[in-house]
Structures are given as structure tokens and as C-alpha cells.
Image: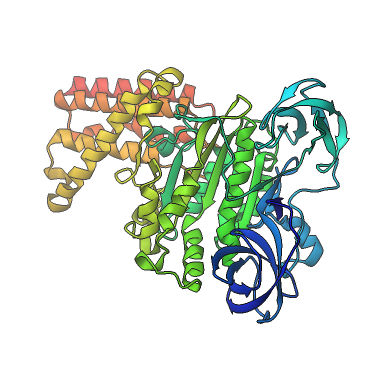
Amino acid sequence: MEVKDKKSKESKHGILKRIAGPVVTAVNLDAHMYDVVKVGKEELMGEVIKIAGENVIIQVYEDTSGIKPGEPVINTGLSLAVELGPGLLTSIYDGIQRPLPILVDKMGDFIQRGVSAPGLSHEKKWRFKPLVKTGDNVKGGMIIGEVQETNIVHKIMLPPDAKPGVVKTIKSGDFTVEETICVLDDNREYQMLQRWPVRVPRPVKEKVNPRIPLITGQRILDGLFPIAKGGTAAIPGPFGSGKTVTQQQLAKWSDAEIVVYIGCGERGNEMTEVLTEFPRLEDPKTGKPLMERTVLIANTSNMPVAAREASVYTGITIAEYFRDMGYDVSLMADSTSRWAEAMREISSRLEEMPGEEGYPAYLAARLSEFYERAGLVKTLNGGEGSVSVIGAVSPPGGDFSEPVTQNTLRIVKVFWALDAKLSQRRHFPSINWLNSYSLYLDSLHDWYDKEVSPEWNKLRSWAMEVLQKEAELQEIIQLVGSDALPEAEQVTIEVARMIREVFLQQNAYDPVDTFCDMTKQYDMMKAIRMFSDLAYSAQVAGVSPNQINSVKSKNELPQIKFIKDYKPDLTKIEKNMDEEFNSLRSAA
């Protein structure tokens, strides 16, 4: 993990006074809030989180077993920051931006204490192509050149806080991230490498209202509860309900140009699956490995809790950096509950007054700070970029009334509620369509009208009405059985079943059904609506619900999900369906 200068000052030694797990207290240490310090003889990395008189409270990002009072503490005078520049993509980091593949080469499968490595390679050379010339006026955040990194063009920017100036010299060629590539008229030198404090949001010109959906290829999300680019969403659900698979589907298939995936306190086997699967996945847009546009941050549940708390800030800062280049970035945080648990543990060791269920009183403020860094923005260089934040929440026992879920719901605009009962019935994704919602529907209305079909929004509203009507009828069915329902409502039950099984259910592991574009979603929904219209008109003409349910062509509709070139088959099914209903009406 690298750090950013606050001010020039000599390192001063303090002495360890007290150790309580990852939280230690030092005295005789000249320090400011959020200074990075080196703790003990092994120089473990830590950060100042509280100053009380002479006592300086530090959270240590590594295991503190074995250190004892009296050992030295050195203040670096720098703040916790990440290295930003070419080399971020394809990287796998821990919570404080130490590259895990490099640490494995150094010490094997288990990270030893006191070991660090820079976030970016300082030896690798990158081909830099200038986009400005001598004599040009430049200012903070402006793009001065580019590097071809994987299939993504990495735009080299001046730091956001750089003062305006005139380019004195700018070079093209092969450079490391630390070599000077640009000199301004006042002899300020700039490299491809930037360092930015993780707790400070990168500045933008302005935030704008989201207006384009983040297409995920997941029918229940795109079709019923869409998220906008630059939006925020939460996926709460109990153990085994499919949070991680849903997050991984979003990381694989969303139409963001850059993906940042934070495994924050997840089980080791789940993170292993991500780390082994992502490098093998093919990007559907380019045909190249998905890792070429991905940054992974792996902080498993057995790693130190302080680093877990830092991992979400590391991830969002990297996401903001790519946003400033004008890219659409999708950030997955799995899961924010583990992050909140890390805050709770550190808060208890600080002996702070606990809030609800032992969480710190500032839980809501910290969650807000994180989610508020999402958004569609106009960048300092005049472009437009976005960061969409999707956070998984793991409420104990699936209790959505617990503090992390409730505070998250006050902040985010999309709620995808996972349901254990649906997962037990093998309905995946197990998102409950009655409890979920999206507050972006109005702002995305025009996009769907223009890009999908003028009928799309009406179809979506119709599908939701049918599903809600089915939920009301299910209560009656449990009392008296489905045969006691009026015939029209028996048809409603069948139409709702088709919406659930044909449209909402989706197989993440099928090579075709794993991703469904908006055209196919519209065609599928239109076919279900066609069945509905034909069924109701047949019922009015005297056809019984049993005869309607026996229509063979409707049973072929679910197979459309698994066919890549589906249009000829769908046309044939619709034709057969029309003919079957005509013959039923004639017989009636």
C-alpha cells in the first residue's frame, strides 16, 4: 500500500502502551488523524483512527499477536492511499492494495507479517502516447496522454489537485510509472503514477442524474428492477440464497467497461472460486479474458479485520480513478455486512458507546459515505463517467430489520431482495419480485421507449400487476384450492406461472441463458403477453381453464431461453399457439 504526502516532516518515534487485538495505543507520538504508522519491531502497517490526549489509537492492518508494550511506533507522516496508474487492470489485491500474486511468489500461500509490495509494478515499461504538446495549457484532471493497457486504453491524467500550467516538455516512448513524462513551465514534473488517499473522494465537475440503465443480462433485474449507470443497489439475503452468484453474474455480464470486485470478508472458498473463474471467463464484447477489464480485491474472513474495513475504500478509489477517464465502472462489494462487522469489532475495542445490535453509532454515516461516492458525473476533463455500486448484505438469519440492511435501504435506490424460500424451490435468481423495487424506473422510462420498444414499459407494468394479483390469489388457493377460483382468475394463475418460470427464472451456468439481451427479453415478454391475451379471449368464449392449460405450444416457450438464434423458433411457437387457440374457440 502506498501513501500520499500530507506535509514534509521527519518521522517521530512513539512507544506502544496497550494492545487490544488489531487496535493498539501509542504514546509520545506526534501524529494526525489517518496518518500511516509502522508498529513494533516488525514494522506492522497501521493507521491512526483516534487521538485522545497523549494516547494515539491505531488500527493495525496485520496480525498483532506477539507484539508487546514498549516496542517502537514510527509515524510516516503520510495518509493511507492507493497507487493509481497503468497495471491496475488484471490485478488481484488484498484490502490494502498489496498484489497477492507477488506476495505468493515471495512467501507462499500465507501472507507473513510486515511484508509489503507496491500496488503497481515500478519496473515494467509502458508505451506512452502524448495527447497534448509543448505550449498547451493544462490543469488538474486533464488527460495528457494514453497507454494501451490490455484492451482498455488507460488515459493518463494530471492529478485532480494539480495547479494549471503550460506544458514545457512532454515525451513519448516507453516509461515506467515513476519516470517523468511531462514537465510544466514552473518545472513541476509528472509521472504516470498517482497516489490518492482512499478516504477522500476524487473531485468532479458535477454530478448528473442517471438516465441510462446498467444492462446486466439478468431478466429480473433489467426487466423489472433496473439499476442506472451511476446508481446504487443492495442485494440482501440469508446464507445460501445466491448473493455471491448474483454478484458474480453482474461482474461478468454488466455492460460497464471496468469492473471492480471487492470480496470483503467473504469465505475463502467463495473468493477462491472468483479468483480461479474470472481469469478463465471470456468477455462477450471483445472475446478476450474478462480479467483484462477487471480489478479484484480479495479480503477473506480470516484476514485482519482492519484491512477489511479499508478494502471498500481501496476499491471505490480505484473505481473513481477509471471513472475520471470517462469510463462506466461497476463496483461489487461482497459483502458490506462483513465490513460493518469489522467496524463493530474495532469500535468495541475502542470502547465506544455501542449503537443498535452493538454496531457503532456512526454505521449509517459510514455506509452513506461509501454509497455516495457512486454517481454519473461530468469529470474535470470535460468527459462523462460513472461508478455504479452494488453491495451485497448478509443479514443474520435473513432478518431484513437488522441495522446494516435498514441503513443501506435508506441510501440505495434499488433493492433486490433475495428469498431463501425461492432458493429452496430452486428458483434462481431467488430475487423476491414482491419485496424488491427500483426508484430509477421514471428516469429510465425514455431510454426503454427509445432503445427497446415503446411497448416495453407497458409490458413491464402488466407483468408486475399479474405477479401481484397472483400473490393475492395464492392466499385464497391455500384456503379453498385453485379449482374454487373463478375461471378468469385460474387463467391469471397460469399466466403468472409462465412469467415466473419462463421470464424470471434464469440459469447462470447455461452458456446461452446466463446472459439475455434486451431484445430477447422483450420478445419473451411479448410472447407471454400474447398467450395471456389469447387465453382470456378463449376463456370468455367458453373454453375451460383445463383446456387452456393443455395448449402444447406454450410448454415449448421455456426452451427459447436456451436457444441462441431463437427468433425462428419463437415465431413458430407463436403461430402454433394462435392456431391452437383458434381451434379451441371454434370447438367451444
